Length: 199
Image 1 (tube, rainbow, N blue to C red):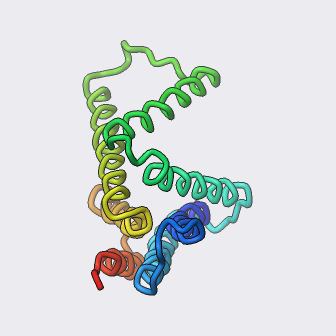
Image 2 (cartoon, rainbow, N blue to C red):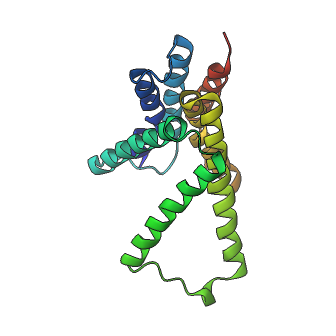
Image 3 (cartoon, rainbow, N blue to C red):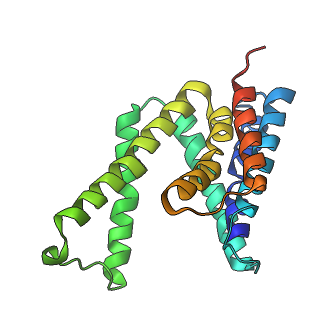
């Protein structure tokens, strides 16, 4: 699992490389250094976590790289492909599309039947809060960032995600938080500040 996470989090580096290759953005030493430092920090946070296991599954790593490529296409398309479409409408389409596909897959695999009688008010509230706080708001903020400061800088800053997840896990479930994760988080946070510095 850890290897898959590390493979997925190469997407900011891919975004930077593709942006430069296509002439969409310029890469200077400051932004390049921030991207590399953020990725290294992310790797430290992920590898410093507990319970990931040491087995390397080639299929999982390949799928994670494919997901990173997909994330790269999504970010660049949302900035340059349909950047004229307002952010709320873009977020709505990007949420509804996967929701429809996942619903079809759930129905085809026999896991899509939810008995309303078994859905309590508390479970429904968890679904709604998870959808709004865990998906809708982050997507709106991320798209706004991509369209405001650009895909490369936004993606570098977004690598704070594993560190934030580790902090939340420490607070909520008491998962151990090591020095490696702290060092990685400091690297990512420093990179986030670095990409925002103006010459």
